[in-house]
Image (cartoon, rainbow, N blue to C red; front, side):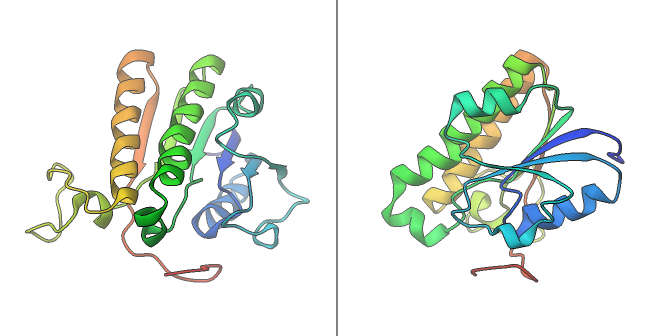
Length: 184
């Protein structure tokens, strides 16, 4: 599927993965809005002359509802990305990853946005899988709070898809690295 000439919002668009996505989407003549609280990303990662940048947080439901007006596609890449931090700050992980994702889905529902691409995680939601490569239908067995939060988000994506007709794609990334990466 090629996404071009669309009005797109990217949460976490100043982060490692999100900023590379923004670069690729700009090549397809898309109008991009990036919302990021800059807790894990940097403004240096995006060209502010080519995108509409909003400093904001996915935990702010009223802001999400306002920003999602007239959007065609949402790329939801904002998260508390530190697996180790999730061990000691479980409520922050829950708030940002799960409640923030529900806010994104509620803003989509209210604004009738029908397509989302979600940045999930492979290793953290499958746990210590007994087979490799792990098939998509493998039982989810998270072994960290971060993995549990990503699995919960995928389940919420499923319920919003069923209840409200939102088309969802969940990208289960493995260990990724490259330019603009800040940890790992």
